[in-house]
Length: 137
Image (cartoon, rainbow, N blue to C red; front, side, top):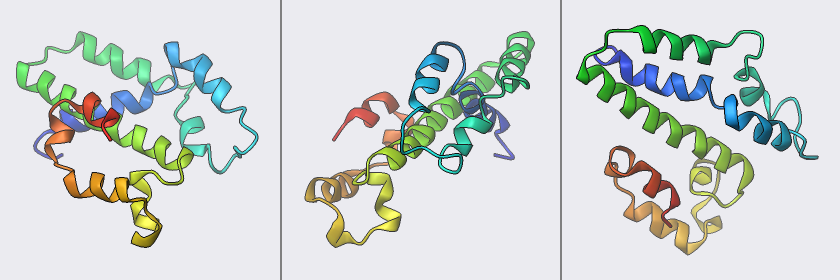
């Protein structure tokens, strides 16, 4: 990230806007689930920033910046990777057999289709066709 700070900024743009705009009603509805607590929703709630609109501030700064093509490419890459990261966090929280739960489960507990998904995973899924990679499997 030291050499390409716009990758991190792209991911931050997604994070800081994750529950704003068109997503706000869906997030508010999702946060009413009976199984949700202050502890397991802290990440999302902290990034709503209704009083400190960091997402709006980032978007305004980017809109007025004189960015080069390489900066825009890095922003797009960061936004894509950030989206994958944050969606995997949501998947981990909501789906007990999700791929992202591999770190806290024994291999015997993981369904065969998830093991195959892990074996066939390629890092290119994070850089090429990220939305398709999220729906595959």
